[in-house]
Image 1 (cartoon, rainbow over the protein chains, first blue to last red):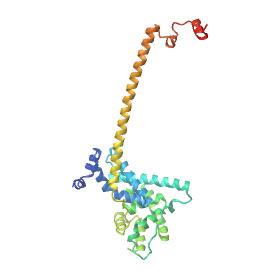
Image 2: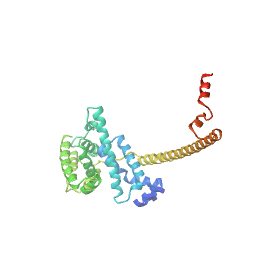
Image 3: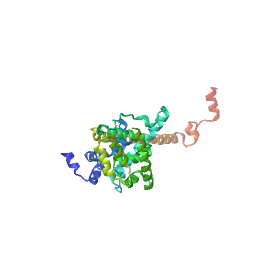
Image 4: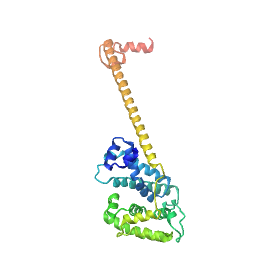
Amino acid sequence: MIRESYRQKSENDLLKASLDGDKQAFGEIVTRYQNMVARTIKGMLGDSVFSEDIGQEVFIKLYHSLSDFRGEAKLSTYIQKIAVNLTLNEIKRRKRFFSTFSQKGNNEMHEFEVADHDTEVRKDASELVSKALMRMDPKFRIIVAMRMLQGYSTKETAEILDLPLGTVLSRLSRAQEQLKSILGKL
Amino acid sequence: MKVTDFKELLIRSLDSESDPVTTSAKIEEAGATFRFSDGFRDKVLEKIYTSGSAVVSEVEFARNLNSVFYRIAFSGAAAIVILLISIFMIQGSFSIDSFLGLGDSYDESIICLLTGN
C-alpha cells in the first residue's frame, strides 16, 4: 500500500524525500533504475556476483551524492554515469589482477556453452550476448552495451560517456566489425 | 528466434541508422535480459541505512572524544597556572633557577650537597 503510493510519485518528489531521509522514497528510485544499471554492469562484466556488488555500490554512491545532483541532466543519465565509471574501474582492477596473477587475459574469465545455430536462442540469448561482449575491447564493449542493451542513441551515449559524437560513431562502426568477427566464431 | 537471426539482430543493432530503442527491445524480447537477483533493493537499502547509523555513531564518538580532550586540556592549563603561582610565591621570581628549585641555593651549597662534604 505504502509502496504503491511511492510508485506514483514524480522523480523530483522522490529525490526530495530521499534527501530528507525517506528510506522508501530512495527504495523506489532503486526499483525504477535497477534493471537499467543491471544491463550496463552485467553487459560489461558478465553475470557474476561482482556485478551485483557493483550494482549496490552504484546506488550507495548515488545516495551519498544526492545533494550534488542539481537536475541539469536526467537522473537516469546521472545514474548511468556512476554505473559506467564504477564498471570501468572494476575492469581496470581485473586487468591489473589478471596481469599480475595469471597469464589468462580478461577474455578468458567467462566461458559459456552456446546453443547450436539452428536451435531457439531464448534460453541462451543472455549468455551469447555476454560471451560476445566479454571478447570485445572494453572501449567498444561499453559503447555496445549502451546501444544494444540500453537502446541509447549515439548522442545519449556520447553524453553519458563524455565522448565527442564523432568518437562514438567511429567506435560504433569499429565495434560492429569486431562483433561480426566474434559472433562468427561463436 | 533462431541463433543465426539473433546474431544478425545483434550486429544490426550497431547500425548508425537503426532505431536503438526498438532494436534493444527486440533483443530483450529474444531473451537477452540482465537483472539483479531478488531482494536487490532491500540489500541496497540495508547497506545504506545500516552504514548511515554507523556513521552517526562514529560522529558521536568523535564529539565525545573532543569534549574529553577539552576537559583534560582545561584542567592541565589550570594545573600549570597554579604551579606557576606557587613557584612565584615560594621563590619570589620566574627565573630558570626558580623553576628548577635552585632559587635560594648557591653553587657552593650545591657542591656540598652533591659531594656530601
